[in-house]
Image (spheres, rainbow, N blue to C red):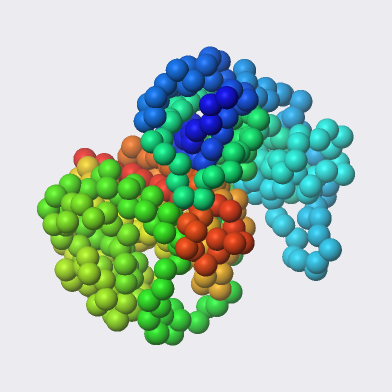
Amino acid sequence: MRVTPLEIALEWDSPHAHHRDRYYFGQIDLTQERFPADLGSRLQELSADQSAQVDILFDDWQEKYQQNLIRTLPREQFRRRSKHPLPPVTPRTGRFYPYRFVSEAIEVNPGPNRALRCLRASERELCIDLNHPLAGRRLQLQATLPDEPQNGSDQVDSPGDILAACASHGPGMQASLPDTDTDFFTEQAFRRIDEAEDSEFYTSPRLVQHLDATCRRHIQDFYARFLQPGMRVLDLMSSWVSHLPAQPDNLVVHGLGMNAEEMQANVRLHDYTVQDLNQDSYLPFEGEHFDAVICTASIEYLTSPRLVIDEVARVLKPGAPLLITFSDRWFPTKAVQLWSELYEFERMQVVIDYLRLGGRFEQLASESLRGHPRPAEDPYSGQLDYSDPVFAVMGKKSPEL
Protein backbone atom coordinates (compact mmCIF):
# COMPACT_ATOMS: atom_id res chain seq x y z
CA MET A 1 0.00 0.00 0.00
CA ARG A 2 1.29 3.46 -0.90
CA VAL A 3 -1.07 6.38 -0.34
CA THR A 4 -0.08 9.68 -1.93
CA PRO A 5 -1.49 12.72 -3.71
CA LEU A 6 -1.24 12.53 -7.50
CA GLU A 7 -1.61 14.93 -10.40
CA ILE A 8 -2.22 13.65 -13.92
CA ALA A 9 -1.70 15.78 -17.02
CA LEU A 10 -3.04 14.68 -20.39
CA GLU A 11 -1.36 16.48 -23.30
CA TRP A 12 -2.58 16.12 -26.86
CA ASP A 13 -2.94 17.97 -30.13
CA SER A 14 -5.88 18.82 -32.34
CA PRO A 15 -5.61 20.35 -35.82
CA HIS A 16 -5.76 23.90 -34.45
CA ALA A 17 -4.32 23.84 -30.93
CA HIS A 18 -2.33 22.06 -28.23
CA HIS A 19 -4.26 20.91 -25.16
CA ARG A 20 -3.31 20.09 -21.58
CA ASP A 21 -5.87 18.68 -19.13
CA ARG A 22 -4.79 18.28 -15.50
CA TYR A 23 -6.56 16.40 -12.75
CA TYR A 24 -5.60 16.28 -9.07
CA PHE A 25 -6.25 13.33 -6.76
CA GLY A 26 -5.89 14.26 -3.09
CA GLN A 27 -5.00 10.81 -1.77
CA ILE A 28 -4.91 7.55 -3.71
CA ASP A 29 -3.40 4.13 -3.15
CA LEU A 30 -1.02 3.61 -6.06
CA THR A 31 -1.18 -0.15 -5.61
CA GLN A 32 -4.96 -0.30 -6.08
CA GLU A 33 -5.51 1.87 -9.16
CA ARG A 34 -5.33 0.97 -12.84
CA PHE A 35 -2.77 2.95 -14.86
CA PRO A 36 -1.98 2.76 -18.59
CA ALA A 37 1.10 0.75 -19.58
CA ASP A 38 3.69 0.41 -16.78
CA LEU A 39 2.98 3.82 -15.27
CA GLY A 40 1.64 2.47 -11.99
CA SER A 41 4.71 0.38 -11.18
CA ARG A 42 7.03 3.22 -12.16
CA LEU A 43 5.23 5.63 -9.85
CA GLN A 44 5.69 3.31 -6.89
CA GLU A 45 9.45 3.66 -7.33
CA LEU A 46 9.43 7.47 -7.36
CA SER A 47 9.88 9.94 -4.53
CA ALA A 48 7.73 12.98 -3.83
CA ASP A 49 7.94 15.75 -6.44
CA GLN A 50 9.04 13.34 -9.17
CA SER A 51 7.20 12.53 -12.41
CA ALA A 52 6.83 9.73 -14.93
CA GLN A 53 5.17 9.80 -18.33
CA VAL A 54 3.97 7.51 -21.08
CA ASP A 55 2.79 8.11 -24.64
CA ILE A 56 -0.38 6.17 -25.40
CA LEU A 57 -3.21 5.80 -27.86
CA PHE A 58 -6.43 6.49 -25.97
CA ASP A 59 -8.15 3.54 -27.67
CA ASP A 60 -5.62 1.05 -26.31
CA TRP A 61 -6.63 1.80 -22.72
CA GLN A 62 -10.20 3.06 -22.97
CA GLU A 63 -13.04 2.89 -25.47
CA LYS A 64 -11.90 2.26 -29.01
CA TYR A 65 -13.12 4.47 -31.81
CA GLN A 66 -16.04 2.66 -33.47
CA GLN A 67 -17.34 3.51 -36.90
CA ASN A 68 -20.76 2.12 -35.96
CA LEU A 69 -21.10 4.97 -33.45
CA ILE A 70 -21.27 7.40 -36.36
CA ARG A 71 -24.98 7.51 -37.16
CA THR A 72 -27.24 9.32 -39.59
CA LEU A 73 -30.82 9.87 -38.47
CA PRO A 74 -33.82 11.98 -39.42
CA ARG A 75 -33.71 15.39 -37.83
CA GLU A 76 -37.04 14.91 -36.05
CA GLN A 77 -35.50 12.10 -33.96
CA PHE A 78 -33.30 14.67 -32.22
CA ARG A 79 -35.44 15.81 -29.27
CA ARG A 80 -34.82 17.56 -25.98
CA ARG A 81 -35.95 15.32 -23.10
CA SER A 82 -37.38 17.54 -20.38
CA LYS A 83 -40.45 17.86 -18.19
CA HIS A 84 -40.18 21.63 -18.44
CA PRO A 85 -41.56 23.74 -21.31
CA LEU A 86 -38.15 24.68 -22.65
CA PRO A 87 -37.72 25.82 -26.26
CA PRO A 88 -36.48 23.21 -28.74
CA VAL A 89 -32.76 22.79 -29.25
CA THR A 90 -31.50 23.34 -32.79
CA PRO A 91 -28.64 20.89 -33.55
CA ARG A 92 -25.64 22.63 -35.12
CA THR A 93 -22.56 21.29 -36.85
CA GLY A 94 -19.64 20.64 -34.50
CA ARG A 95 -21.60 21.14 -31.28
CA PHE A 96 -22.06 18.65 -28.43
CA TYR A 97 -25.42 17.60 -26.96
CA PRO A 98 -26.65 15.12 -24.33
CA TYR A 99 -27.03 11.56 -25.59
CA ARG A 100 -30.56 11.46 -24.21
CA PHE A 101 -31.66 13.78 -27.03
CA VAL A 102 -31.44 10.80 -29.41
CA SER A 103 -31.70 7.88 -26.98
CA GLU A 104 -35.07 6.72 -28.34
CA ALA A 105 -33.66 6.53 -31.87
CA ILE A 106 -30.36 4.76 -31.07
CA GLU A 107 -30.28 1.17 -29.83
CA VAL A 108 -26.75 1.39 -28.36
CA ASN A 109 -25.95 3.06 -25.07
CA PRO A 110 -22.51 4.70 -25.17
CA GLY A 111 -22.38 5.10 -21.39
CA PRO A 112 -23.54 7.44 -18.63
CA ASN A 113 -23.18 11.20 -19.12
CA ARG A 114 -21.99 10.70 -22.71
CA ALA A 115 -22.41 13.58 -25.10
CA LEU A 116 -22.94 13.18 -28.81
CA ARG A 117 -21.35 15.41 -31.42
CA CYS A 118 -23.27 16.73 -34.38
CA LEU A 119 -20.98 16.19 -37.36
CA ARG A 120 -23.37 17.54 -39.93
CA ALA A 121 -26.81 19.12 -39.80
CA SER A 122 -29.21 19.63 -42.70
CA GLU A 123 -32.91 20.38 -42.84
CA ARG A 124 -33.81 16.70 -43.05
CA GLU A 125 -31.12 14.70 -41.29
CA LEU A 126 -28.24 14.70 -38.86
CA CYS A 127 -24.93 12.88 -38.76
CA ILE A 128 -23.86 12.32 -35.16
CA ASP A 129 -20.81 10.84 -33.44
CA LEU A 130 -21.27 8.89 -30.19
CA ASN A 131 -17.58 8.07 -29.71
CA HIS A 132 -15.67 9.44 -26.73
CA PRO A 133 -14.26 12.90 -27.62
CA LEU A 134 -10.72 11.57 -27.10
CA ALA A 135 -11.22 8.38 -29.11
CA GLY A 136 -8.50 7.87 -31.70
CA ARG A 137 -6.17 10.46 -30.16
CA ARG A 138 -2.60 10.02 -29.04
CA LEU A 139 -1.91 11.33 -25.56
CA GLN A 140 1.14 12.07 -23.48
CA LEU A 141 0.20 11.17 -19.93
CA GLN A 142 2.38 12.64 -17.19
CA ALA A 143 1.92 11.64 -13.56
CA THR A 144 3.46 13.73 -10.76
CA LEU A 145 3.68 12.97 -7.04
CA PRO A 146 3.26 16.34 -5.25
CA ASP A 147 5.27 17.03 -2.11
CA GLU A 148 2.30 16.87 0.22
CA PRO A 149 -1.48 16.73 0.05
CA GLN A 150 -3.46 19.96 0.03
CA ASN A 151 -5.74 20.86 2.91
CA GLY A 152 -8.97 18.96 2.58
CA SER A 153 -7.32 15.94 0.92
CA ASP A 154 -7.43 13.56 3.88
CA GLN A 155 -9.85 11.05 2.40
CA VAL A 156 -8.42 8.39 0.09
CA ASP A 157 -9.90 8.56 -3.44
CA SER A 158 -10.68 5.36 -5.31
CA PRO A 159 -11.09 6.30 -8.97
CA GLY A 160 -10.27 2.72 -10.04
CA ASP A 161 -9.17 3.63 -13.56
CA ILE A 162 -6.96 6.74 -13.56
CA LEU A 163 -7.25 7.51 -17.27
CA ALA A 164 -11.03 7.05 -17.25
CA ALA A 165 -11.36 9.46 -14.32
CA CYS A 166 -9.19 12.13 -15.96
CA ALA A 167 -10.93 11.80 -19.33
CA SER A 168 -14.48 12.00 -18.01
CA HIS A 169 -16.89 14.92 -18.25
CA GLY A 170 -15.35 16.89 -21.07
CA PRO A 171 -11.72 16.44 -22.19
CA GLY A 172 -11.72 16.30 -25.98
CA MET A 173 -14.63 18.70 -26.42
CA GLN A 174 -12.27 21.67 -26.76
CA ALA A 175 -11.10 20.41 -30.16
CA SER A 176 -12.94 21.59 -33.25
CA LEU A 177 -13.57 19.29 -36.17
CA PRO A 178 -10.53 19.05 -38.49
CA ASP A 179 -12.15 20.37 -41.67
CA THR A 180 -15.33 22.13 -40.57
CA ASP A 181 -15.83 25.17 -38.36
CA THR A 182 -18.23 24.68 -35.47
CA ASP A 183 -21.52 26.51 -35.92
CA PHE A 184 -21.18 28.77 -32.87
CA PHE A 185 -21.87 32.19 -34.30
CA THR A 186 -25.62 32.30 -34.81
CA GLU A 187 -27.82 35.38 -34.60
CA GLN A 188 -28.99 34.42 -31.11
CA ALA A 189 -25.60 33.34 -29.75
CA PHE A 190 -24.64 36.69 -28.25
CA ARG A 191 -27.99 37.77 -26.89
CA ARG A 192 -28.41 38.02 -23.12
CA ILE A 193 -31.20 37.69 -20.61
CA ASP A 194 -30.51 41.24 -19.43
CA GLU A 195 -30.01 43.48 -22.45
CA ALA A 196 -30.01 46.69 -20.40
CA GLU A 197 -26.93 48.92 -20.56
CA ASP A 198 -24.01 47.19 -18.83
CA SER A 199 -23.12 50.49 -17.17
CA GLU A 200 -26.30 50.11 -15.07
CA PHE A 201 -25.34 46.59 -13.94
CA TYR A 202 -21.82 47.67 -12.96
CA THR A 203 -22.76 50.99 -11.32
CA SER A 204 -22.18 49.65 -7.80
CA PRO A 205 -18.74 48.20 -7.02
CA ARG A 206 -18.55 44.50 -6.20
CA LEU A 207 -15.54 44.18 -3.91
CA VAL A 208 -15.99 40.44 -3.40
CA GLN A 209 -14.24 37.33 -4.70
CA HIS A 210 -16.21 35.34 -7.25
CA LEU A 211 -13.77 32.39 -7.37
CA ASP A 212 -12.42 30.36 -4.46
CA ALA A 213 -8.87 30.85 -3.17
CA THR A 214 -7.44 27.68 -4.73
CA CYS A 215 -8.84 28.54 -8.15
CA ARG A 216 -7.42 32.09 -7.89
CA ARG A 217 -4.00 30.74 -6.92
CA HIS A 218 -3.93 28.44 -9.94
CA ILE A 219 -4.88 31.32 -12.25
CA GLN A 220 -1.98 33.31 -10.77
CA ASP A 221 0.36 30.36 -11.35
CA PHE A 222 -0.82 30.14 -14.95
CA TYR A 223 -0.15 33.83 -15.62
CA ALA A 224 3.27 33.59 -13.91
CA ARG A 225 4.49 31.21 -16.62
CA PHE A 226 4.19 33.95 -19.25
CA LEU A 227 5.07 37.16 -17.41
CA GLN A 228 8.56 38.63 -17.14
CA PRO A 229 9.85 41.54 -15.00
CA GLY A 230 9.01 44.97 -16.33
CA MET A 231 6.35 43.80 -18.79
CA ARG A 232 3.58 46.20 -19.77
CA VAL A 233 0.33 44.28 -19.18
CA LEU A 234 -3.28 45.09 -20.07
CA ASP A 235 -5.81 43.64 -17.62
CA LEU A 236 -8.84 43.47 -19.89
CA MET A 237 -12.25 43.70 -18.19
CA SER A 238 -10.48 44.46 -14.94
CA SER A 239 -11.92 44.84 -11.45
CA TRP A 240 -10.62 45.27 -7.89
CA VAL A 241 -8.16 42.35 -8.24
CA SER A 242 -6.07 41.35 -11.25
CA HIS A 243 -5.25 37.73 -10.27
CA LEU A 244 -1.60 38.42 -11.05
CA PRO A 245 1.21 36.50 -9.29
CA ALA A 246 3.17 38.22 -6.55
CA GLN A 247 6.28 37.92 -8.71
CA PRO A 248 7.32 39.63 -10.86
CA ASP A 249 6.22 42.61 -8.78
CA ASN A 250 7.35 45.32 -11.20
CA LEU A 251 4.79 44.77 -13.94
CA VAL A 252 3.28 47.92 -15.42
CA VAL A 253 -0.42 47.07 -15.40
CA HIS A 254 -3.22 49.06 -17.05
CA GLY A 255 -6.76 48.04 -16.16
CA LEU A 256 -9.71 48.45 -18.49
CA GLY A 257 -13.05 47.77 -16.84
CA MET A 258 -16.53 48.99 -16.05
CA ASN A 259 -16.26 50.40 -12.52
CA ALA A 260 -13.80 53.11 -11.48
CA GLU A 261 -14.15 52.41 -7.75
CA GLU A 262 -13.27 48.75 -8.22
CA MET A 263 -10.14 49.59 -10.22
CA GLN A 264 -9.11 52.30 -7.76
CA ALA A 265 -9.03 49.55 -5.12
CA ASN A 266 -6.79 47.34 -7.30
CA VAL A 267 -3.26 47.65 -5.89
CA ARG A 268 -1.67 46.11 -9.00
CA LEU A 269 -2.95 48.75 -11.41
CA HIS A 270 -0.75 51.69 -12.38
CA ASP A 271 -3.56 53.27 -14.40
CA TYR A 272 -7.04 52.42 -15.55
CA THR A 273 -9.68 53.16 -18.18
CA VAL A 274 -13.43 52.91 -17.68
CA GLN A 275 -14.95 51.50 -20.87
CA ASP A 276 -17.84 49.27 -21.92
CA LEU A 277 -16.41 46.98 -24.59
CA ASN A 278 -19.92 45.94 -25.60
CA GLN A 279 -20.57 49.54 -26.62
CA ASP A 280 -17.13 50.37 -28.01
CA SER A 281 -14.64 47.62 -28.87
CA TYR A 282 -11.83 50.06 -29.82
CA LEU A 283 -8.98 49.95 -27.29
CA PRO A 284 -7.60 53.45 -26.59
CA PHE A 285 -3.93 52.48 -26.92
CA GLU A 286 -1.27 52.72 -29.57
CA GLY A 287 -0.50 49.69 -31.69
CA GLU A 288 2.02 47.16 -30.33
CA HIS A 289 1.89 48.78 -26.90
CA PHE A 290 1.57 45.80 -24.54
CA ASP A 291 3.80 42.82 -23.75
CA ALA A 292 0.83 40.71 -22.59
CA VAL A 293 -2.96 40.90 -22.22
CA ILE A 294 -4.88 38.98 -19.55
CA CYS A 295 -8.64 38.48 -19.28
CA THR A 296 -9.95 36.76 -16.15
CA ALA A 297 -13.46 35.36 -15.67
CA SER A 298 -14.96 37.86 -18.13
CA ILE A 299 -14.79 36.58 -21.70
CA GLU A 300 -18.34 35.21 -21.39
CA TYR A 301 -19.79 38.74 -21.18
CA LEU A 302 -18.54 40.03 -24.54
CA THR A 303 -21.26 40.42 -27.15
CA SER A 304 -18.73 41.06 -29.96
CA PRO A 305 -15.76 38.98 -28.80
CA ARG A 306 -14.04 38.69 -32.18
CA LEU A 307 -13.98 42.49 -32.62
CA VAL A 308 -12.42 42.85 -29.18
CA ILE A 309 -9.88 40.10 -29.91
CA ASP A 310 -8.90 41.89 -33.12
CA GLU A 311 -8.28 45.03 -31.08
CA VAL A 312 -6.22 43.04 -28.57
CA ALA A 313 -4.07 41.82 -31.46
CA ARG A 314 -3.55 45.41 -32.61
CA VAL A 315 -2.27 46.65 -29.23
CA LEU A 316 -0.09 43.57 -28.53
CA LYS A 317 3.54 43.41 -29.59
CA PRO A 318 4.38 40.67 -32.12
CA GLY A 319 4.86 37.35 -30.33
CA ALA A 320 3.18 38.62 -27.14
CA PRO A 321 0.59 36.42 -25.38
CA LEU A 322 -3.13 36.82 -24.87
CA LEU A 323 -4.12 34.82 -21.76
CA ILE A 324 -7.82 34.12 -21.11
CA THR A 325 -9.00 32.28 -18.00
CA PHE A 326 -12.45 31.40 -16.69
CA SER A 327 -14.24 28.95 -14.43
CA ASP A 328 -17.78 27.64 -14.10
CA ARG A 329 -19.22 30.67 -12.30
CA TRP A 330 -20.62 33.82 -13.90
CA PHE A 331 -23.53 36.26 -13.81
CA PRO A 332 -26.17 34.35 -15.83
CA THR A 333 -28.21 37.41 -16.81
CA LYS A 334 -25.18 39.12 -18.38
CA ALA A 335 -23.38 36.16 -19.97
CA VAL A 336 -24.14 35.63 -23.65
CA GLN A 337 -26.66 32.92 -24.47
CA LEU A 338 -24.07 30.75 -26.22
CA TRP A 339 -22.01 30.42 -23.04
CA SER A 340 -24.85 28.90 -21.05
CA GLU A 341 -25.61 26.40 -23.84
CA LEU A 342 -22.12 24.90 -24.02
CA TYR A 343 -20.41 22.17 -22.03
CA GLU A 344 -17.54 23.43 -19.85
CA PHE A 345 -14.79 22.06 -22.09
CA GLU A 346 -16.69 23.16 -25.19
CA ARG A 347 -16.33 26.76 -23.98
CA MET A 348 -12.58 26.47 -24.51
CA GLN A 349 -13.30 25.49 -28.10
CA VAL A 350 -15.31 28.64 -28.77
CA VAL A 351 -12.65 30.86 -27.17
CA ILE A 352 -9.98 29.17 -29.31
CA ASP A 353 -12.18 30.02 -32.31
CA TYR A 354 -12.32 33.67 -31.23
CA LEU A 355 -8.54 33.75 -31.63
CA ARG A 356 -8.20 31.33 -34.54
CA LEU A 357 -10.78 32.74 -36.92
CA GLY A 358 -9.38 36.25 -36.73
CA GLY A 359 -6.12 34.92 -38.15
CA ARG A 360 -3.94 37.10 -35.92
CA PHE A 361 -2.85 34.58 -33.29
CA GLU A 362 -0.72 31.46 -33.43
CA GLN A 363 0.50 28.74 -31.01
CA LEU A 364 -3.05 28.35 -29.75
CA ALA A 365 -3.48 26.19 -26.68
CA SER A 366 -5.94 25.31 -23.95
CA GLU A 367 -5.48 24.11 -20.40
CA SER A 368 -7.82 22.78 -17.74
CA LEU A 369 -7.34 21.98 -14.06
CA ARG A 370 -9.85 20.05 -11.93
CA GLY A 371 -10.07 17.96 -8.79
CA HIS A 372 -8.41 20.14 -6.17
CA PRO A 373 -10.20 20.20 -2.80
CA ARG A 374 -12.24 23.28 -1.96
CA PRO A 375 -10.49 25.39 0.71
CA ALA A 376 -11.79 24.67 4.21
CA GLU A 377 -12.37 28.37 4.86
CA ASP A 378 -14.45 28.80 1.70
CA PRO A 379 -18.14 29.52 2.38
CA TYR A 380 -19.13 26.63 0.09
CA SER A 381 -16.73 24.08 1.61
CA GLY A 382 -19.56 22.18 3.27
CA GLN A 383 -21.57 22.03 0.05
CA LEU A 384 -18.95 21.52 -2.67
CA ASP A 385 -16.06 19.06 -2.44
CA TYR A 386 -13.94 20.51 -5.22
CA SER A 387 -12.37 23.86 -5.93
CA ASP A 388 -13.70 25.86 -8.86
CA PRO A 389 -12.15 24.43 -12.05
CA VAL A 390 -9.74 26.50 -14.11
CA PHE A 391 -10.05 26.74 -17.88
CA ALA A 392 -7.54 28.69 -19.93
CA VAL A 393 -6.97 29.57 -23.57
CA MET A 394 -3.84 31.26 -24.86
CA GLY A 395 -2.33 32.42 -28.10
CA LYS A 396 0.55 34.59 -29.26
CA LYS A 397 0.22 37.41 -31.73
CA SER A 398 1.63 36.32 -35.06
CA PRO A 399 5.03 38.01 -35.59
CA GLU A 400 4.30 39.01 -39.19
CA LEU A 401 1.29 41.16 -38.19
